[in-house]
Image (cartoon, rainbow, N blue to C red):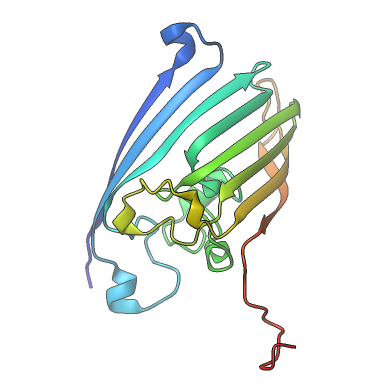
Length: 210
């Protein structure tokens, strides 16, 4: 079987320091247009799509955020419409895979809680700090609505009144051999977690609700 699916992206970034003299300020907006058919949905029937690019055929707003960098980027704050999975639970190595079980993020997380990754975004804020060249701390809070990725909204549903809760992420990373003058192979060692405040079914409850 042969199926076709494409993603066309448009990104616009503005460096406020160069434009208006605002040190460390940046603005970013992007969109995505996806069209095609899923090989997994139509022919295979597997859970993890064989192509990370697929699916969600629609035209949507993706990113819409402002960012402030301070202390030579030792502290970085980003707020607006963004995706948790673009920075949390991610690694440059994941992007080398084609199938969607690992590519970008370990996709099992998306079956546990409403989670977002390109091209689906939601309202949120992310703070990243780097107190040492080899130590990075990051935390983020996002709208945890389960319907944020629906194609009919085209990425412009900003109504947080129907939110299903808040998704909070935290992560600490050891950035091994990533400084400019470092020797040896670079690497990342990360430890993190997430919490979603919304309602979930109790998997251990009996039929009588006990």
